[in-house]
Image 1 (cartoon, rainbow, N blue to C red):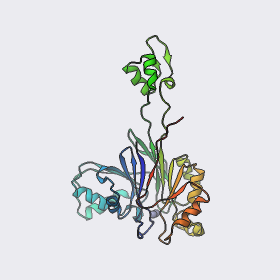
Image 2 (cartoon, rainbow, N blue to C red):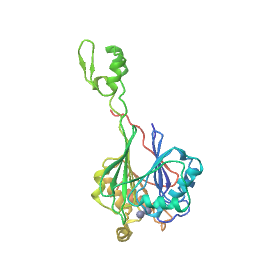
Image 3 (tube, rainbow, N blue to C red):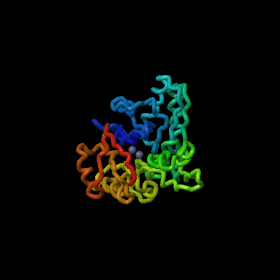
Image 4 (cartoon, protein in one colour):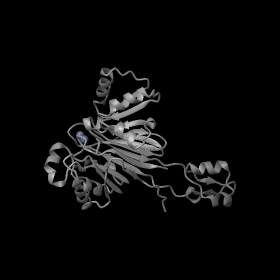
Length: 309
Ligand SMILES: [Zn+2]
Ligand SMILES: [Zn+2]
């Protein structure tokens, strides 16, 4: 029951040695979701053995080049690899003409369906849902229309306490009904509460992606209590003025958001190329929010499945 984030690129604006531009892969129960697609994303997928063909949905935060210039190349490669599975790409206004023009003027004729879905950057909305996950977009505050994304694991069928099956001699239909959350009606007419025959639900895991954005408490409501929060931290706190001007956050901003959102863990990223040593950024964030880690190319961040008491 995997729930794992892999950073493909952690740099902002321009790549630096060892740090590619922004892109991430989230694996939820073997469903692979690509988040942003900076230049070089395909190379990082090769480096980190990401099963590229399994990606069916891509989520773009905004149209700055460091988040989307990898898209035309990736789409072109899928076409050359004879992809037939449809591909959906979600992102704010402008994504449709950007991709249509890139494909048209590079004479790409796709052999698969490409669905480009424009996400409203002014309000919260659920943009994708299947049996395993619900994905929502919410407004961030950057220089151009930008959204963050939240990925929430969905509940599975309940597990039955094995001893209750023999104790009450439950048949197939009674077990099935209980798995869906119903109370059990015994042959005697007696009703057993669902909670008596089923195990407590598992903790449902969640991940939120916030890049790029200036510090704002407006989006905390959408990321409350997430297990894992990625928040951009382009600058250290002595660059606060520049961060504000450029629509970016500092390490302290990211840590304060994580604290106020009651996140389980904070992953930093989108570092300015001015920083060679990232440890001072980590230490600064940890002074506010202890459970912080650097997001680095090739690193995996697992959220374990926890059984509730
Ligand atoms: Zn950026
Ligand atoms: Zn940006």
